[in-house]
Length: 423
Ligand SMILES: *Cc1c(COP(=O)(O)O)cnc(C)c1O
Image (cartoon, rainbow, N blue to C red; front, side, top):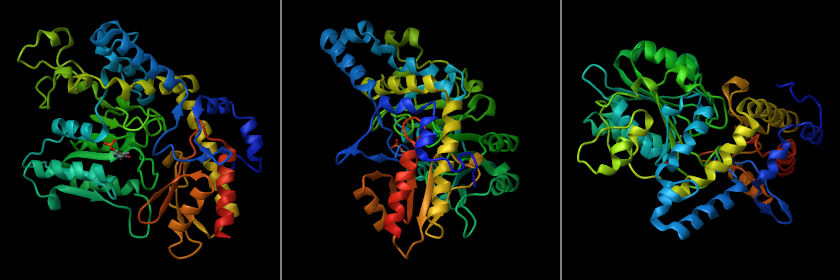
């Protein structure tokens, strides 16, 4: 159990939290006469207040300039995506050339697998975790089939051991040791969506590369949640969505990382589009594709401006807070929630997320043990009480206290209501 928060009250912990003022930068969804307790930033992050003004500016530029907004808008649309490279690079520990904001997550998984899952007769397998997020599994399996391979042989799905809820890192290393020379691509999540487990991305990347595998990370639940150092870790690619911890709004544009060692590899097979073409000659409208250096060379289409704009507001808040301070608060906040659950609900709730703060982000995944099959009922009653968290079949309630806008009081209130419901 953590001693980070000791016996202090939630109010005292909030009062001494230097990041507490950031909550005022977000729209908190209301419930009855007050705020809801929003613990669902792992699913959809809250709206930064600045987003509406920024979106209004883009609409205004469209109204004023029409097509000329591509060049004359206050943030010209022709290069709109480029303003995100620096901020996303800071959050991922990347060089700006390694970053592009484009498409949506599953689309990017496919585009990157086209380039980095290149099965051959002696190295053809694709390693993922089980249970992977369905979209990732569908993408991986369909890539395997696309190459004419049989998923029963080519797709390795590594699950937690019987009766355990997260994957032992040792088991990953053992698979790499035993089967690594047949594995073309290792595709794992930085933070697993169901269990909340944070993987040792540095160690796994290094081990997989020693075995000659390509390595890609799905950072949907990791970016904005835990510190990342993608360039130094040396993975081949990564991709993420920007609507969870990055608060860029429903369906917001995704981001990709392609390691700098692939930045000038025009021969790397890829599916091409005009926005990935050399910027200087893009509007010559020539027939021959010459990719931009770096991650931008994987772009297909011109940037969807309205699906990018709210990210400006959110990245500004991340820069203001700093990922190190956010992570420090996050550990205290999640540790506080864990302590409250253990002390006030002994035997009624089982935490499926690793207890080691080094092996998790902010999310805790909870199984209700207060009675058989009570999980869904408990979840529904939480919702009635204005607690927003989420339910994942078959039996898990996920709660994610987010350090940008959640308070220690939110965690305490969640546990208060849970005690009431399960009592
Ligand atoms: C949220 C999430 C997705 C969502 O994919 P979209 O293409 O953005 O709809 C995919 N994979 C993982 C692991 C996720 O957490």
